[in-house]
Figure 1 (spheres, rainbow, N blue to C red):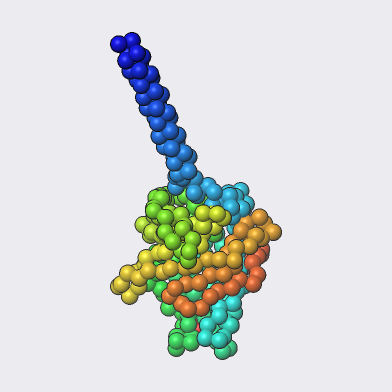
Figure 2 (figure 1 turned 30 degrees about the vertical axis):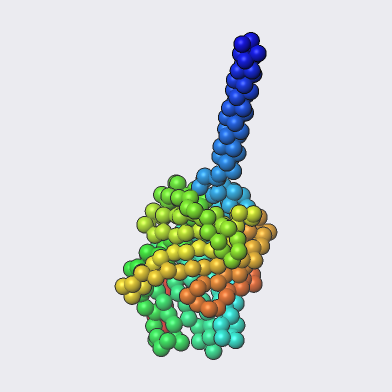
Length: 254
């Protein structure tokens, strides 16, 4: 009887230890998984840090980019001039003809002589709504809450063999975009946005690569590829906070 009771107590003690051990193990696994789970704000914080930090980006008041658009064997020069939250102009020259697109806080215009236009024409309200969001040179994620934007962490998704972190950004304007982040660098490698064109909703997918650090401490992609246009854009020169004559944004009738 005593032997049987001793065996029972030993069994009970061993079982309790095993249960306690398993309990600690399960708790440890839960804590481990929680420690590796990231919130949307943590992804944003790591991204901003990777591209130069909030302080450096808040110093960006204007930007001039000189680039090359490679299409059908031609290299088309492209100049993008922008003033933070005020205006942006994209100017390009093809076969001696110069066209441009201007978007300001008040309106937007296109002039494309290659398509037979003889004077600048206003863009649609849908194009203007989307274009105005692009006037923020400091980036959607810098002070996104103060700007009235919201973010949501989505399930990861494969982008060319990399399981990317995914955030959905809903801007104050109502425009939405999905951002794909490389989990190692926290650079944005792809964006996906939906917009209205000619009464139809279309998706614009942009791939970003070749990130380089500028003297001002910010890091930007130097290769941009839009799924709608089979023509990569390569940045050749970037000037931050240079002298910009805002007269460049005035629409001159031809």
